[in-house]
Image (cartoon, one colour):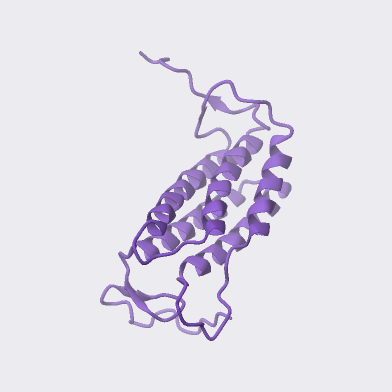
Length: 190
């Protein structure tokens, strides 16, 4: 478990940080950038929760916890030798819960006839921001998975992909189930 009794340790003063298994990496390392962007996504979701109605807030609270699981997963690359602890990994059930939440929210939202501009209600705007940051985290995770000597689980990649879909549908739910979406009008201002 986590124990934080000192916030500053000075161990990162020269631009390195420790992964969960203790190995030191540059703070500019792609793995660190990836789980840092997952953390940024989580912060955006925290902002969205300030404006969310209770049902959506409960879904977002579960996601925030999942994102710490995902960060732990990404901060613990697989090693050839067993670790002295069981590493925390994202599992298929977490991806499935996102799919179920997407389906539940989307069941009452009418289909789109145009792209949605990011905005509308404060909750929807914050969820759109979270969605774009999540997509960046996903792109970084895909890049990390394709890097020589690096591994990212299929479930971690699936979770990020489903999460951005969830955040889009949640933004529509926060916009009066799509009634208050701001739609793109191609060429409107020519």
